[in-house]
Image 1 (tube, rainbow, N blue to C red):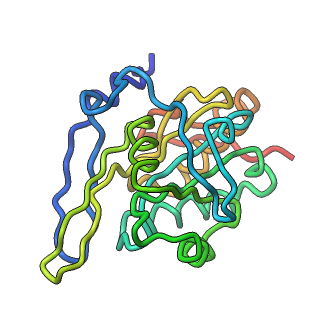
Image 2: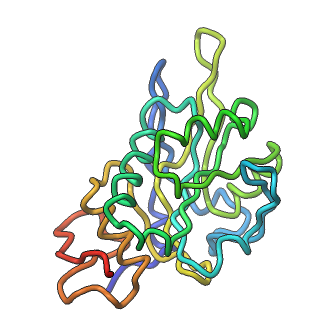
Length: 221
C-alpha cells in the first residue's frame, strides 16, 4: 500500500544549506502550515498576461505544480528541463495536463523576466505571479517552505521546497516528482497522471515512489 500524502509530507525534514552560487532545498514539514492535513486550496495570483488565476484554473485537468525562482542556479532550471524533456516526449498527451511554475521571488521575477526565462523550456509550462502576500498564501496552501537568504555580496537567494507536486483533476494531491528524479521516471509519472488507468499492463509509475523500474508505459494516440 502506498504511503499517504500526509505521512510523506510529515516525514520530510531534510534541509539543504545555502552557499554562494548554489540553491538550497527545503523539504516541507506539515507542522509549519496553517492546514497541515490538506495540500492545496484557494489562492489568488495572475498569469503572465495579467489575467487573474485561482484554484479553479488547476481543476478539470491533472496538475504538476512547481515553486521556484528565476535566479535559482541549479534546482529550478534542472527541474524545468527535466519536465520539458518529458513533456516533449509525451507529445499531444501533455496537453491533458496543467504544468505550472510559481515564482517565490516576486521582487525580481516580473512577468517579462519570467516569460524570457520560460522561453527555454516547453511552452506548455505556465507561470503564476503575485504580490509577496499572495505568494505566501499560495505557498502555505500548497505546503511549500521557502525563505530569503542574504548572500555576502549583498544579493540574496531563496531556500525552497524542491519537489513537483502532482494533483488529480479534482485538486487532490496524488504524488510527487522528487528533485533529481530522471527524465524517464518523470515521463512515466506524468503519463500515469495524465492518463489514469489507460497505460498498458506493467507500465506507468507509482506516483509516490522515487526509485525502482518505471515500466514500459507510453503515450496514447
